[in-house]
View: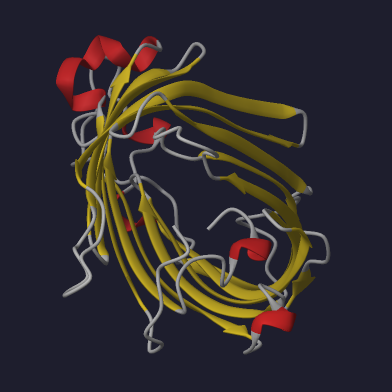
Length: 309
Protein backbone atom coordinates (compact mmCIF):
# COMPACT_ATOMS: atom_id res chain seq x y z
CA UNK A 1 0.00 0.00 0.00
CA UNK A 2 2.99 2.34 0.37
CA UNK A 3 5.39 1.12 -2.31
CA UNK A 4 4.57 -0.43 -5.74
CA UNK A 5 7.98 -2.16 -5.80
CA UNK A 6 6.70 -4.49 -3.07
CA UNK A 7 4.26 -6.16 -5.49
CA UNK A 8 5.20 -9.83 -5.67
CA UNK A 9 7.76 -9.80 -2.84
CA UNK A 10 5.93 -12.41 -0.76
CA UNK A 11 4.91 -15.92 -1.71
CA UNK A 12 3.73 -16.73 -5.23
CA UNK A 13 0.27 -15.38 -4.38
CA UNK A 14 -0.78 -12.97 -1.63
CA UNK A 15 -4.17 -11.48 -0.71
CA UNK A 16 -4.81 -8.97 2.04
CA UNK A 17 -7.52 -6.85 3.65
CA UNK A 18 -7.31 -3.80 5.94
CA UNK A 19 -9.94 -2.05 8.05
CA UNK A 20 -9.40 1.12 10.09
CA UNK A 21 -11.83 3.09 12.28
CA UNK A 22 -10.74 6.44 13.73
CA UNK A 23 -12.16 9.34 15.79
CA UNK A 24 -15.65 7.84 16.16
CA UNK A 25 -16.64 10.26 18.94
CA UNK A 26 -15.08 13.45 17.58
CA UNK A 27 -17.10 13.51 14.35
CA UNK A 28 -18.66 10.94 12.10
CA UNK A 29 -16.26 7.95 12.14
CA UNK A 30 -13.33 7.99 9.74
CA UNK A 31 -13.44 4.54 8.09
CA UNK A 32 -10.92 3.07 5.67
CA UNK A 33 -11.32 -0.31 3.93
CA UNK A 34 -8.71 -1.74 1.57
CA UNK A 35 -8.14 -5.03 -0.25
CA UNK A 36 -5.19 -6.15 -2.33
CA UNK A 37 -3.84 -9.05 -4.36
CA UNK A 38 -0.37 -9.56 -5.79
CA UNK A 39 1.54 -12.36 -7.45
CA UNK A 40 5.18 -13.18 -8.23
CA UNK A 41 5.99 -14.46 -11.73
CA UNK A 42 9.53 -15.66 -11.01
CA UNK A 43 11.50 -17.59 -13.56
CA UNK A 44 11.93 -21.31 -12.98
CA UNK A 45 15.24 -22.99 -12.55
CA UNK A 46 18.25 -22.37 -10.34
CA UNK A 47 19.98 -20.02 -12.79
CA UNK A 48 17.14 -17.50 -12.71
CA UNK A 49 17.12 -17.44 -8.91
CA UNK A 50 14.76 -14.78 -7.55
CA UNK A 51 14.68 -12.57 -10.65
CA UNK A 52 11.12 -12.07 -11.75
CA UNK A 53 8.06 -9.94 -12.37
CA UNK A 54 5.51 -8.97 -9.74
CA UNK A 55 1.95 -7.77 -10.42
CA UNK A 56 -0.51 -6.30 -7.96
CA UNK A 57 -3.90 -4.60 -7.65
CA UNK A 58 -5.24 -2.53 -4.76
CA UNK A 59 -8.73 -1.28 -3.89
CA UNK A 60 -9.32 1.39 -1.24
CA UNK A 61 -12.37 3.25 0.06
CA UNK A 62 -12.06 5.98 2.67
CA UNK A 63 -14.96 7.87 4.27
CA UNK A 64 -13.99 10.82 6.45
CA UNK A 65 -15.92 13.11 8.73
CA UNK A 66 -19.04 15.18 8.31
CA UNK A 67 -19.68 16.56 5.67
CA UNK A 68 -18.72 13.17 4.35
CA UNK A 69 -15.61 13.08 2.14
CA UNK A 70 -15.37 9.77 0.28
CA UNK A 71 -12.35 8.54 -1.66
CA UNK A 72 -12.43 5.44 -3.87
CA UNK A 73 -9.19 4.24 -5.47
CA UNK A 74 -8.12 1.39 -7.75
CA UNK A 75 -4.39 0.97 -8.29
CA UNK A 76 -2.48 -1.41 -10.58
CA UNK A 77 1.17 -2.18 -9.82
CA UNK A 78 4.05 -3.81 -11.67
CA UNK A 79 7.47 -4.56 -10.20
CA UNK A 80 10.64 -6.35 -11.21
CA UNK A 81 12.97 -8.02 -8.72
CA UNK A 82 16.67 -8.62 -9.34
CA UNK A 83 18.87 -10.82 -7.17
CA UNK A 84 22.00 -8.82 -6.33
CA UNK A 85 23.88 -11.42 -4.29
CA UNK A 86 23.16 -14.81 -2.83
CA UNK A 87 21.14 -13.26 -0.01
CA UNK A 88 19.97 -9.83 -1.26
CA UNK A 89 17.47 -8.52 -3.82
CA UNK A 90 16.51 -5.15 -5.29
CA UNK A 91 13.10 -4.30 -6.75
CA UNK A 92 11.74 -1.40 -8.76
CA UNK A 93 8.06 -0.78 -9.33
CA UNK A 94 5.52 1.49 -11.01
CA UNK A 95 1.86 2.11 -10.27
CA UNK A 96 -1.04 3.74 -12.04
CA UNK A 97 -4.29 4.48 -10.25
CA UNK A 98 -7.77 5.87 -10.72
CA UNK A 99 -9.31 7.75 -7.82
CA UNK A 100 -12.67 9.39 -7.34
CA UNK A 101 -13.31 11.86 -4.52
CA UNK A 102 -16.73 13.18 -3.54
CA UNK A 103 -18.17 15.35 -0.78
CA UNK A 104 -21.73 15.39 0.55
CA UNK A 105 -22.48 18.67 2.35
CA UNK A 106 -26.07 17.75 3.22
CA UNK A 107 -25.30 17.07 6.90
CA UNK A 108 -22.78 19.86 7.31
CA UNK A 109 -22.86 22.37 10.15
CA UNK A 110 -22.47 25.99 9.08
CA UNK A 111 -21.66 29.24 10.86
CA UNK A 112 -25.01 30.64 9.71
CA UNK A 113 -26.73 28.04 11.94
CA UNK A 114 -25.17 29.45 15.11
CA UNK A 115 -27.91 31.35 16.99
CA UNK A 116 -25.53 33.31 19.18
CA UNK A 117 -25.50 30.69 21.95
CA UNK A 118 -25.28 27.27 20.32
CA UNK A 119 -25.56 25.45 16.99
CA UNK A 120 -29.22 25.17 15.93
CA UNK A 121 -29.87 22.67 13.08
CA UNK A 122 -33.36 24.16 12.68
CA UNK A 123 -31.89 27.33 11.18
CA UNK A 124 -31.56 27.23 7.39
CA UNK A 125 -27.90 27.18 6.42
CA UNK A 126 -28.35 29.30 3.34
CA UNK A 127 -25.97 26.98 1.49
CA UNK A 128 -27.38 25.84 -1.84
CA UNK A 129 -24.51 23.94 -3.53
CA UNK A 130 -24.99 20.22 -4.12
CA UNK A 131 -22.44 17.48 -3.60
CA UNK A 132 -19.36 17.56 -5.76
CA UNK A 133 -17.04 14.88 -7.12
CA UNK A 134 -13.88 14.68 -9.15
CA UNK A 135 -11.73 11.93 -10.67
CA UNK A 136 -8.03 11.61 -11.44
CA UNK A 137 -5.43 9.33 -12.95
CA UNK A 138 -2.22 9.14 -10.94
CA UNK A 139 1.29 7.67 -11.22
CA UNK A 140 3.67 6.35 -8.58
CA UNK A 141 7.06 4.64 -8.43
CA UNK A 142 9.28 3.01 -5.83
CA UNK A 143 12.29 0.85 -5.03
CA UNK A 144 12.89 -1.74 -2.29
CA UNK A 145 15.91 -3.62 -0.95
CA UNK A 146 15.94 -6.85 1.04
CA UNK A 147 18.78 -8.86 2.56
CA UNK A 148 18.29 -12.19 4.34
CA UNK A 149 21.32 -13.60 6.12
CA UNK A 150 20.80 -17.02 7.62
CA UNK A 151 22.94 -18.09 10.60
CA UNK A 152 26.13 -19.93 9.74
CA UNK A 153 27.97 -22.73 11.46
CA UNK A 154 26.44 -23.98 14.68
CA UNK A 155 24.53 -20.78 15.36
CA UNK A 156 20.82 -21.39 15.94
CA UNK A 157 19.68 -17.80 15.86
CA UNK A 158 16.82 -16.63 13.69
CA UNK A 159 18.03 -14.95 10.46
CA UNK A 160 19.10 -11.34 10.10
CA UNK A 161 16.71 -9.63 7.68
CA UNK A 162 17.06 -6.04 6.46
CA UNK A 163 14.29 -4.37 4.45
CA UNK A 164 14.08 -0.79 3.17
CA UNK A 165 12.03 1.08 0.59
CA UNK A 166 11.53 4.51 -0.93
CA UNK A 167 8.55 5.56 -3.05
CA UNK A 168 6.92 8.60 -4.61
CA UNK A 169 3.22 9.10 -5.35
CA UNK A 170 1.35 11.77 -7.36
CA UNK A 171 4.29 11.92 -9.76
CA UNK A 172 1.90 12.56 -12.65
CA UNK A 173 -1.66 13.52 -11.74
CA UNK A 174 -4.22 14.09 -14.49
CA UNK A 175 -7.70 15.42 -13.76
CA UNK A 176 -10.59 13.70 -15.54
CA UNK A 177 -13.22 16.23 -14.40
CA UNK A 178 -13.45 20.01 -14.43
CA UNK A 179 -14.00 20.30 -10.68
CA UNK A 180 -11.15 21.42 -8.43
CA UNK A 181 -13.36 21.94 -5.38
CA UNK A 182 -12.00 19.03 -3.33
CA UNK A 183 -8.31 18.66 -4.18
CA UNK A 184 -6.89 21.80 -5.73
CA UNK A 185 -3.22 20.92 -5.19
CA UNK A 186 -1.93 17.50 -4.19
CA UNK A 187 1.86 17.57 -4.17
CA UNK A 188 4.27 14.66 -4.59
CA UNK A 189 4.33 12.42 -1.51
CA UNK A 190 7.69 10.81 -0.68
CA UNK A 191 7.49 7.74 1.57
CA UNK A 192 10.28 5.72 3.13
CA UNK A 193 10.46 2.75 5.48
CA UNK A 194 13.01 0.39 6.96
CA UNK A 195 13.12 -2.50 9.42
CA UNK A 196 15.69 -4.97 10.73
CA UNK A 197 14.85 -8.48 11.96
CA UNK A 198 17.55 -9.37 14.52
CA UNK A 199 17.57 -12.93 15.81
CA UNK A 200 18.37 -13.27 19.52
CA UNK A 201 18.20 -17.07 19.53
CA UNK A 202 16.33 -19.76 17.63
CA UNK A 203 12.97 -18.67 19.08
CA UNK A 204 13.16 -14.89 19.65
CA UNK A 205 13.97 -11.74 17.69
CA UNK A 206 13.56 -7.98 17.88
CA UNK A 207 12.43 -5.93 14.89
CA UNK A 208 13.13 -2.17 15.03
CA UNK A 209 11.21 -0.29 12.33
CA UNK A 210 10.70 3.25 11.06
CA UNK A 211 8.26 4.80 8.58
CA UNK A 212 7.95 8.36 7.31
CA UNK A 213 6.63 10.55 4.55
CA UNK A 214 6.83 14.13 3.31
CA UNK A 215 4.26 16.04 1.27
CA UNK A 216 3.59 19.74 0.63
CA UNK A 217 5.76 20.86 3.54
CA UNK A 218 4.12 18.39 5.94
CA UNK A 219 6.07 15.46 7.38
CA UNK A 220 5.28 12.39 9.43
CA UNK A 221 7.48 9.81 11.10
CA UNK A 222 6.67 6.70 13.16
CA UNK A 223 9.35 4.65 14.91
CA UNK A 224 9.37 1.72 17.31
CA UNK A 225 10.06 -1.99 17.57
CA UNK A 226 8.44 -5.42 17.69
CA UNK A 227 9.39 -8.31 19.91
CA UNK A 228 8.98 -11.63 18.08
CA UNK A 229 8.42 -15.01 19.70
CA UNK A 230 8.36 -18.15 17.58
CA UNK A 231 5.55 -20.48 18.66
CA UNK A 232 6.21 -23.35 16.26
CA UNK A 233 9.33 -23.73 14.14
CA UNK A 234 11.11 -26.33 12.02
CA UNK A 235 9.85 -28.87 9.49
CA UNK A 236 9.20 -32.58 9.33
CA UNK A 237 10.46 -35.06 6.74
CA UNK A 238 6.93 -36.51 6.72
CA UNK A 239 4.78 -33.37 6.58
CA UNK A 240 5.61 -29.69 6.46
CA UNK A 241 4.91 -28.06 9.81
CA UNK A 242 2.98 -24.78 9.83
CA UNK A 243 5.47 -22.34 11.28
CA UNK A 244 3.86 -19.80 13.60
CA UNK A 245 4.98 -16.72 15.51
CA UNK A 246 3.70 -13.88 17.66
CA UNK A 247 4.89 -10.26 17.44
CA UNK A 248 4.00 -7.42 19.80
CA UNK A 249 5.32 -3.89 19.58
CA UNK A 250 4.98 -0.21 20.41
CA UNK A 251 5.53 2.73 18.07
CA UNK A 252 5.53 6.47 18.56
CA UNK A 253 4.44 9.26 16.23
CA UNK A 254 5.67 12.56 17.73
CA UNK A 255 2.92 14.96 18.88
CA UNK A 256 0.16 12.59 17.68
CA UNK A 257 -0.03 9.03 19.00
CA UNK A 258 1.40 5.98 20.70
CA UNK A 259 0.58 2.90 18.65
CA UNK A 260 0.34 -0.58 20.18
CA UNK A 261 0.54 -3.40 17.64
CA UNK A 262 0.23 -7.16 17.57
CA UNK A 263 0.81 -9.67 14.79
CA UNK A 264 0.25 -13.41 14.75
CA UNK A 265 1.37 -15.62 11.87
CA UNK A 266 0.27 -19.21 11.44
CA UNK A 267 1.39 -20.98 8.29
CA UNK A 268 -0.07 -19.08 5.35
CA UNK A 269 -2.21 -16.77 7.50
CA UNK A 270 -1.30 -13.49 9.21
CA UNK A 271 -3.55 -11.39 11.45
CA UNK A 272 -2.50 -7.94 12.65
CA UNK A 273 -4.09 -5.54 15.13
CA UNK A 274 -3.16 -1.94 15.92
CA UNK A 275 -4.56 0.51 18.46
CA UNK A 276 -3.68 4.22 18.41
CA UNK A 277 -3.67 6.14 21.69
CA UNK A 278 -3.93 9.78 20.64
CA UNK A 279 -1.57 12.20 22.41
CA UNK A 280 -2.52 15.34 20.45
CA UNK A 281 -5.15 17.92 21.40
CA UNK A 282 -7.77 15.51 20.06
CA UNK A 283 -7.02 13.33 23.10
CA UNK A 284 -9.22 15.70 25.14
CA UNK A 285 -12.12 13.69 23.73
CA UNK A 286 -10.90 10.59 25.60
CA UNK A 287 -11.32 7.13 24.12
CA UNK A 288 -13.43 8.53 21.26
CA UNK A 289 -10.24 10.02 19.76
CA UNK A 290 -8.52 6.67 19.41
CA UNK A 291 -8.19 4.41 16.38
CA UNK A 292 -8.39 0.68 15.69
CA UNK A 293 -6.98 -1.19 12.70
CA UNK A 294 -7.27 -4.81 11.55
CA UNK A 295 -5.11 -6.49 8.89
CA UNK A 296 -5.56 -9.96 7.36
CA UNK A 297 -3.11 -11.57 4.91
CA UNK A 298 -3.13 -14.97 3.21
CA UNK A 299 -0.15 -16.21 1.16
CA UNK A 300 0.16 -19.42 -0.82
CA UNK A 301 2.12 -21.06 -3.61
CA UNK A 302 1.23 -23.55 -6.31
CA UNK A 303 4.78 -24.90 -6.24
CA UNK A 304 5.85 -27.54 -3.73
CA UNK A 305 8.89 -25.87 -2.28
CA UNK A 306 10.03 -24.32 0.93
CA UNK A 307 8.69 -20.82 1.67
CA UNK A 308 10.99 -17.86 1.10
CA UNK A 309 10.62 -16.74 4.72
